[in-house]
Length: 393
Image (tube, one colour):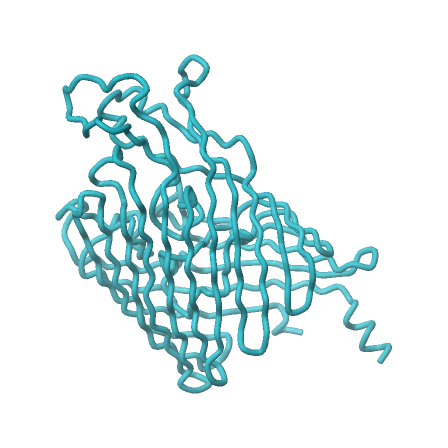
């Protein structure tokens, strides 16, 4: 027994990852910078916006590399993790380049670094092969400082997370193009997040919450005015329910105001709102009276429902649907994102835990503020080969 305890306390180090190639055949079209993911927000609602329908892509962007280490320091476990993939986003959108996923350490109950938001429940992500995943779930990794209470069936975590306001100038760009181009997010305070999670043999349930200060300012203007701040908040209820020996039902519902930047896809945290009596502007119209416009946080609803079924030890399928719906302000542009839907079904073959081959049928739809819609259907076939330094011991 003493030898077993000593082995459990020994430092551990692992290098891991996988090489994955995805073949994608679109039947319609998405923003070409996002050919390798199905994001409803990147589906055009105007025909021929990005060119002809029916595009093909072959990508290795999902490939992943990571290292993790664990040892005991002063009687408490220390765990450190670095992980990257190759999926360029932001200024690197469309590129195959290193993208940081995780970079954090946890010593006892204290975690510091970048990892999944406390407002998020990554365990409801279904057994799918498309990279981006369901639109209606909270999914973001943030730099944070976190404290976790409890280690049994019930666990509570609280964190301060890096804010990331997404501000939509909307039709302010028509009323005052200079003002519209100079409005930017104002992130004065960290976001406060927390969750309570209860787990058992049946699965788990988690309730998460967030409070945040969402604001904007005008760069280059005297005193950076106009500027404004609002309180953003949200609740995220999620659950995994086991069905049979291996099957899992993934469920999630999230609602809040000013939380779009925490969603997997779609929406904006704050948009312009006009007081009663102010109509939508047209180019060349007189400017609206001073004080007629203000920024407001946007209400958002997200839903996710997926079912993972295991036919046997080697064959599995996942099928489900997800949705995000934004309550737009009355001064956002007609083409502002309002609703996104995402659905998929697949068949996956895993002859060995280190090998996965699968095919997936996907559908997504975007609806704008003015009711215009666009959709995309695609097929994805993936080959994934995993490795771990533990396999060579």
